[in-house]
Image (cartoon, rainbow over all chains, first blue to last red; front, side, top):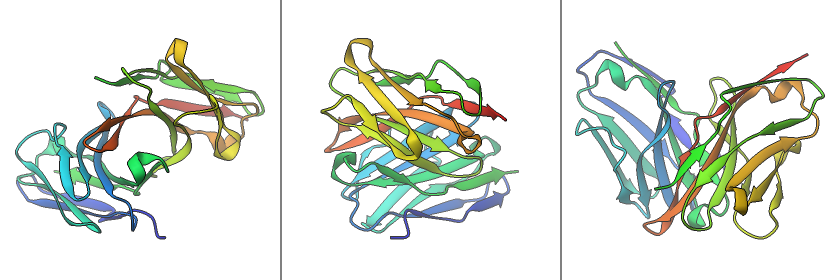
Length: 114
Length: 115
């Protein structure tokens, strides 16, 4: 398996633009997580899906952030409009069987909003 | 609510020395506990996990961790550190919610290895 695949690896955008981050979980995994990592706040859980259904989005910072999981093999995290304070590394992770086999992380998307 | 505390932000050890990274958690039920490692510019790699059973768990790269319920701790150890172990280490607790487990991470411990 290729692991959790995130795209793009790097994204530089101007303030006010829409940004879409993509994630392909490991085939057969039924839970998907979006995390944000910054120096100031560390690793924060943004949203969590189980069987394609959003379970907990309490970590989504504000209405500018939205996430979807239209099927078991794809998820997006969208920021519209983007702001400089959204600059961070965004990680996607997936797991199976309530994490009994661990959680596998993608390589992340480094987002810079200028 | 669950939480994880890693009291040491930075640790420096000499190559070949032993290592212990501390982790304390707060959770009302029996937790699922994890240690992850992150090298610069990389994602997080699972080192080991604890769900139940033997409280001493073995992981990859020669790491082990011991779950101590009485102390709410899950400290990571390695008997002899290698220079390639320099990285950031994260402890995490998995809490059951909505039919699955979500991970809550500590703030991480940056490990530096002196040659």
